Image (tube, rainbow, N blue to C red; front, top):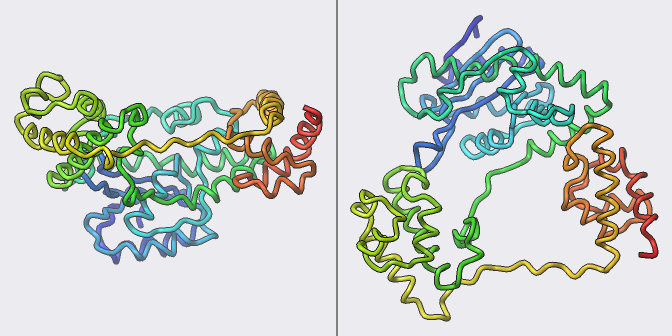
Length: 380
């Protein structure tokens, strides 16, 4: 790497990059993907920066990125991201890259107590930098990429290392650095979600309100949308919107003319897909009743009457503590964790270790308070 911005488009250049980065203590990372333009999204650009250099890797020009794996897996090299969840999942999905020693500056900003934690807001507040987001929704799979787009992408990592250093000092002063480090360790292990063979309607907002017949129509339309999107290499929302599919599933029009009357699709969409949509709807409407899907309903657990009392007591304590610490209440204990603690009702701190998803920092920092609150609710 040389001073300034380096564009990397070969395996040999990656090898040199890895050797150079290995001599540093921190590496800022960001990526750009093409989810707005293609059916199967992929990482199209990988931006990195040390305290002295910047580099942009073009993964569409390099067949094998496995040389990056040891670097990302190096526990002595801190990888700095801002809002790492999507990036961690994408790097694993496309390149099987696993990350050790991750530091998320957005997560750190929340634990410091910042209200606005988007990268644009944080950089403006800390450095007086205004990020130009005009290329945010551009097609990052296009080649060649204009120089201004590459410069835009590189700018997202330019300040991350300095930001990480600032936030670490502030977290250390507030005795919260260990909290963020543990959260980042969990964040580094998130992975892409695979739908498998489950019905597509399970991840569709509003499906739970439909009748079994309309649900069958919706599933047929969702399957058709996937097939069309894959064939045309377009993202799902650019084939049919969710709102359009929900309207069609509810109305169940049986012909292109009837589809047109619903207003769910444009005239162009009806012309292109009307026959296929009508056929999918017709097949679903002709399914026998025994073959109709049902939306799975999660039965609310039957709690002991004392559980809601404990939840309220824990929530009141948490909200007071969050205000005192000037933090979001959900950062201290989220709703699911409050419920799990109330149900288990441990009477000693050691009992908190049996509660899934409770972090070590939450037990050590607030365990005594939590047990005290639970003990006060005895007799309810």
